[in-house]
Amino acid sequence: MRATGLASQISAGIFLCKDVNEQRLKVLVENLLANDRISRVVIRPHPKNLWTQMDAWIAAHHDGRLCKSREASAVEDVKEVDVVFGGNSSVLIEAVTAGVPSAYVDHLDHGSPDLHRFVAAGLIYRTNVDPDFDELVGFYRQPEWENRLRGFANVDEDESTVIANTVRAIRALCSIR
Image 1 (spheres, one colour):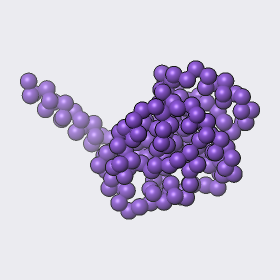
Image 2 (cartoon, one colour):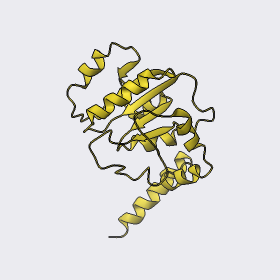
Image 3 (tube, one colour):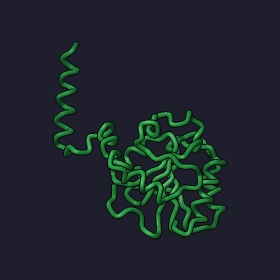
């Protein structure tokens, strides 16, 4: 996790699944924009976004702090924000492995709650639509959290080691036939 915690002004990213719960998203955005610490809210819709009115809803805010992502990849958006919010999205794992505190928002999409069991495993912080940023950062500062992350991602290995291990595993699978 980023060693410095969150700054006094926070850029928040909301990464959505394709079947977003529009009402829940709206409340989350309103609460974020009402928070004095929020300098920007970037919404990244799923590539197969089912909410056809999202662009119009964002534009209707007339608030320069709220925008839709213009980045080609989720990784680029993660780099540009201080905190990530999401529902049943694997981007939560990408964000925490990149050192960005992330929060699962209950019912942000219409899927089963904690579908990937990231919250149940203690890997991702759970929040409601009115997040407590100090509590969120505190979750990731727990000494045991890094060990939980290691159970999901090989964060201690460099890229060349990961590639070599992947090639070995693929060769082993090919020789099973």
